[in-house]
Image 1 (tube, rainbow, N blue to C red):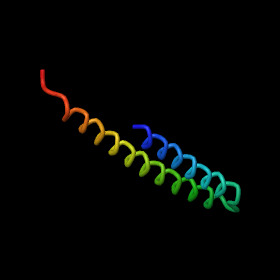
Image 2: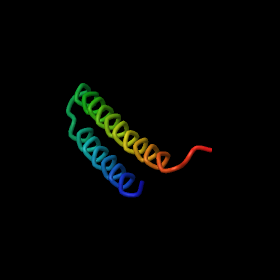
Image 3: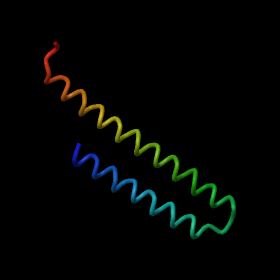
Image 4: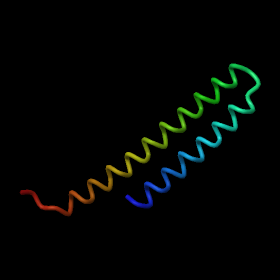
Amino acid sequence: MGSSAGSYARGVAAIHKKYQSAIKHAKTRQAVLNAYWKHKKESENLLAKHLREEMGEVKRIKAKMEYR
């Protein structure tokens, strides 16, 4: 899980940095909302990818163990 967790944390930081920048530069209420919706979608996609990778790791570990 080590490198996966690190890349996830870096991904979250990058997405959050872009979001904060977009919020600061927004000139209209709609621009603020658009920045939020884009940020939300990127965050959800990254989390889904991260959880898929973790489940793959769980399945690999389980496959090496014998049933009791």
